[in-house]
Length: 138
Image 1 (cartoon, one colour):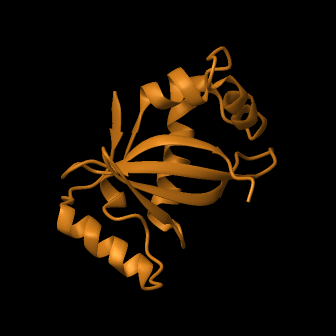
Image 2 (cartoon, helix red, strand yellow):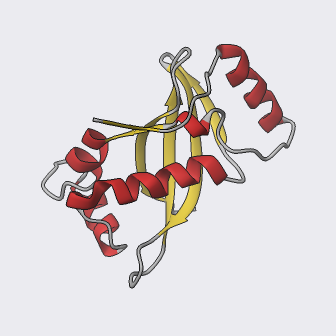
């Protein structure tokens, strides 16, 4: 299952233009964030899975913020909100596309907030897709 929003289309030109705007000091959301994708597998199977060998510690951290595996869409919505409203992001070209790193604060009612670093990738003309998220120690 894929969690997707919005009807816009990303092109390499759009990504390059967004990268240039960012390098020139413009503060905008991640390009095409309205179409960003957060997959069930990424959250349910990894970031919120306490028994995952790599994601277990992240699942404990997100659990302390009030996020549970069976309600993965809540975290998906909060991570999508970071992509759509971040004030700053860093870009990095990789062999697979352009990566965007954006930080924001997430939490659920009755729990402490936590600062999280999200990593998104744009491959070719695809919408941004969540790669990972973890505590932002900066």
